[in-house]
Structure formats: structure tokens, C-alpha cells
Image (cartoon, rainbow, N blue to C red; front, side):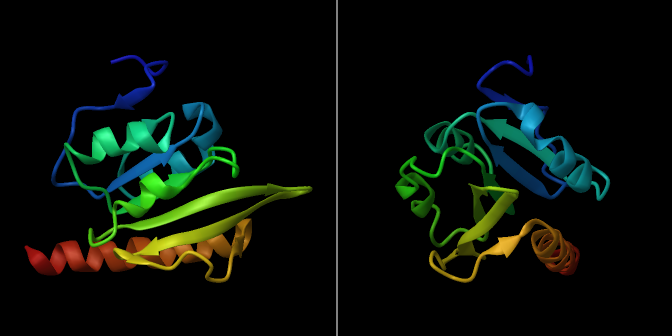
Length: 139
């Protein structure tokens, strides 16, 4: 598949932890993609939350990060309630962005405290460790 395809994913590897990156361009996720791939995670991309739901119908994701404009309706993401995934949306601010929790391990938490970029990386590190522990313990 080509990267310019609105729903882009490499061949699915069910033995790797999965992250779904939602945004208008895959290139906007370069730093986060390197973060996850350095830890052995597999990254998939979608251009919108609705396209993400199409992908979610075919596989499960441990983490979903959404950078679509904040005015975009996040209701499609709430359909993931009950699935073991953590979902965050970014909100652009003057000098960067805030990451807003939408769901944590399948439980809705929209309205919880937001994270600045540096805090968010620390939060992702914790989530990555928890997912890796759960997936290793399940084997």
C-alpha cells in the first residue's frame, strides 16, 4: 500500500503491540512513529476517526492518537468504549499542543486532565510498559 492512501497500514502483525495514528498526514506523526517503532510497536494511519473505525473493525489497537482539528466531532472514538485501548486527542495551542485523554483502557475519561507534550511522552512510556506487561503476561 502507499503512504498517501487515506487508510495506510503495513501488513498486520498480531504479535506486535498496535498504535493507530489519526490525522490528515502520516508525516505529522514522525516523532511519535519513531517513539513507538523503537519499542517494537506497529503503527497504522487513518485520515479521520471514521476511517479509523474501519481499521478498528479489522484489528485491535492498544493506543489511538488523534490529531484531527479539535472542532472535529470525536463521537466516533467513543464507539471504542469497552475495548482495551487508550485514546488521546491533541489540541493545538500557541506554542505546541495539549494531549487530551478520551479513553483509558476502554473506559471513557474525556474531561480528565490534559498533558503537555513532555508530560504526554512520560504518560505514553507508562502506557507502553503496561501494554507490554499485559501482552507478555497473557502469553
